[in-house]
Image (cartoon, rainbow, N blue to C red; front, side, top):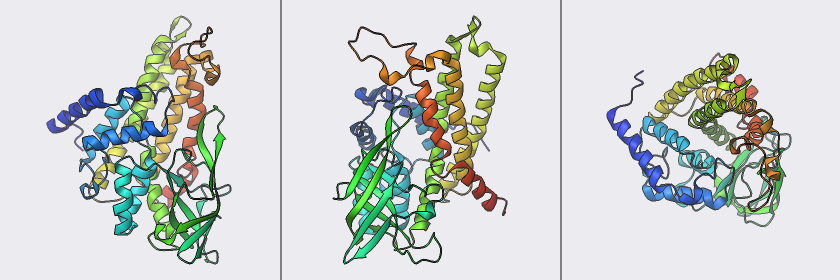
Length: 398
C-alpha cells in the first residue's frame, strides 16, 4: 500500500487549506471548540460548501457530489479538523442520503437530496427508543395505514439535535404480526412540523442540550413518505448504520484532539516540569498515537473500497469500536492533564461584563464536559459490545 501522497493530492490539500482560510465564515470561527453553535450555523457552513461545489464530498457526481477520490475526501476531512470547522451533521448527508440513493423512488431522490446538499433541510434520526437501543429490532413505535396516510404513534429517544431538525427519518412497526422482530418494520420520512410531533429536551450531565425525546401522537404522514417497500425497513436501517459507524471513527478530529492534548501537556506542570515530560504520561500519548495510526490506515482502506462501489462491511464495526475508544482516551488524558482546572462547572462561569473571572485557563473549561459527553460514543450507532458480535459473525463465522 503506497502511503505517499501524489503531487495532485498535495496540491489539493493546499487548495482546501486556502479555501478554509479565506472562505470559512468568520462568524463561525471558534464556535465548535467553544461548544457554541446553532442550527443556522450548521446550515450556513453547508451552504458555503455547496456554493464552492463541495457540498457533498462522498456523494456520486450524478447527485451533486464532488467526485473526489478516497484520498481527496480524507484530505478534506483532515483539513477541516485542522481548521476546527463545524462538522457537517451526518444525519442527512452521510446517513439518510445513501439510503435514498439506494432504495428511494426517483421522485423522493429529486425532492430530498437537493435540499440536503443545498443546506435547506436539517435532518435527525428516529431510531432508538426506551428499551430499544442496541436491540433496535424491539422498537414499538407503530405506523398504521389509514387511506393514503400512515398514523404514527410512539416515542423515540436520544434524538441528537432533534430541536434543530426540519425532518426526521423514523423506523416504525407496520406489521405487528410479523414472525420475527426484524420483519414488519418500515422506514418513513416525517416533517417535524406535522401536528402531533413533540420534541422534549434531555439535559445531559454536563448541562448541555444535544439530545431529546421525540413523541409521535396520531401523526399523519403521507404514504408517499415511505422509503422503499413497506415492512423492509430493517434492510435500509442496517445499510444506514454501516455508513453511520464508518463516520463515527472520527480519525481527523482525533488527530486534532491529540495535537491539542500535546499543547496542554506542554504547559501544565507536574512537580515543576511540563506533564508531557512525565515518562508514564508520555507513554500514554505515544500508545494513543500508535492506535490512531492503525485506525487511520483501516479507514483509508475502507474509503478505497467505497470508491470502488463496495459498501462498508465489517470494517465499519472495527472503525466504530477503535475510533470511539480513542476518542474517549483523548478526553481522559486531556482531563488528566488539566488536573483540578477540569473541576469547575464552566456553564456557571460569569458572562461577558461580569467582574468575576472564570477559573483556570480557557483550554480547561470544556475538558470535563467533553469527557462526560464522550462516554456516549461507545454506545450510539450500536454499542461496542454489539459491534464485537457483528465482527465475530461476519469475520470469524461464529
